[in-house]
Image 1 (tube, one colour):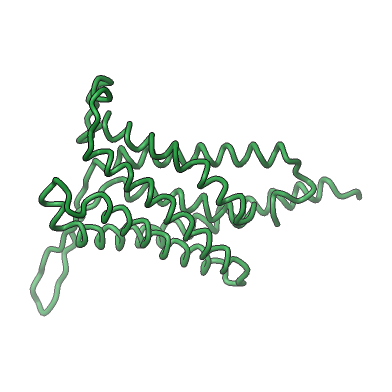
Image 2: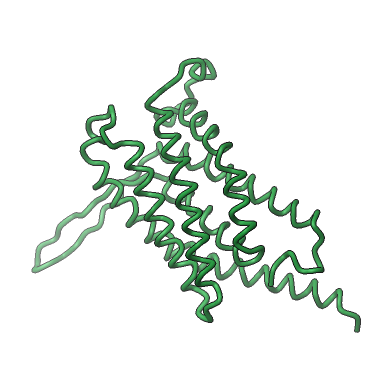
Length: 235
């Protein structure tokens, strides 16, 4: 069922798309802040009687950005692929501006003051461009994959596949544009390894957390739509 069925008028549909666009921008802004706050996870593995600690680093932005994939998949399921692409094209340029502003204002996760915006930061702008390109390419691929698979009876195949390929494109595009031959020597040397670890962690979180969340939210929405249809149908 889609929200462009006769029980919804154009104004209601337009209002929903506007709110979804703001949600995308909010998640992008939040992720650009939280990506500057790292954390470390340490796992203790025991093999052949010997215990070894395995640790990897990530950022809190890895946990917030997948909300966009959740919103996009639900948009494709309820509204259709065309409206999902409209949201992406509406959001992409505000997202570029927001990415730059947030990254400059909260450099190293500390508020730098509004005067920091008076100086153009090429390094941060490159990261903002990377975020812009990653968002557009990752989300468009997410829409294509999800739209191809959403008619399957097994509900989790579409969101899992779209998140897998969308996150892969998003991560590779971001790290390659932001840090390939970067002014930061460490990131210039290790961007591929860091991007791969980031993708694996993002994929793990997406499958464990966001795919089940998609199923729960979709069921809630469909129940509400069925109630609306029942209310409109004469007894």
